[in-house]
Length: 234
Image (cartoon, rainbow, N blue to C red; front, side, top):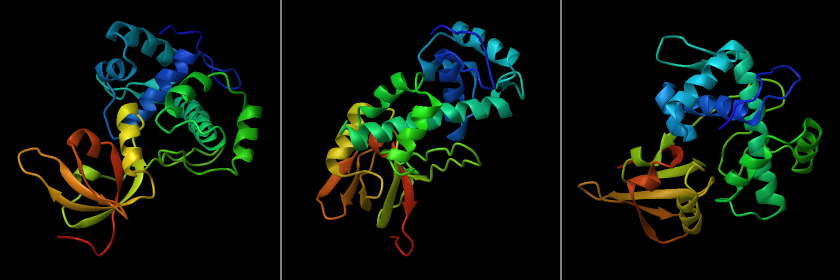
């Protein structure tokens, strides 16, 4: 991943700059401390490459170090990261809604397109879609201006047996898993009945509303976020 010139304001950053800012934002929004090693793993690049890019982002006043080990976005860095996140999620929604691209494929397509989308076309897509608030995976779409809040909710693997669980977000980081969950009907807005947790690390048995009982392993339940419905419990 090669870094271009660090720019801000009305000048677009390089694709590599944007990828780093978006990755830092994503890690921190999930409550993780961002380190060089974590960022290298997230972007699938070497630690020396991350170190070099972080120095450039620090020089551009887009990233700061609250302590020697961790990284965080400055106010300007978060502004730039949210611009990329907004474009990405709008593109996912457009591809899914207007072009019928399967929900497990839109992430990779949006990754390619987000760096070349103009502000003007972004606004046209937003208007064409009716100003959506969330993308197909349930991720909130940041507004062009104003405050944006990322809420991940409770993970399905933490929901107790005997509860009803409303799916709000499904992580888009694993395409085969997304495809499988979609086939089962585990999508934002779906209601699940958590029926049983098999012992010794076995699957969690859930029933999608109106569907059959299904076993979901830990690799799948860790991708599903939402909330337990009031009044349900063991």
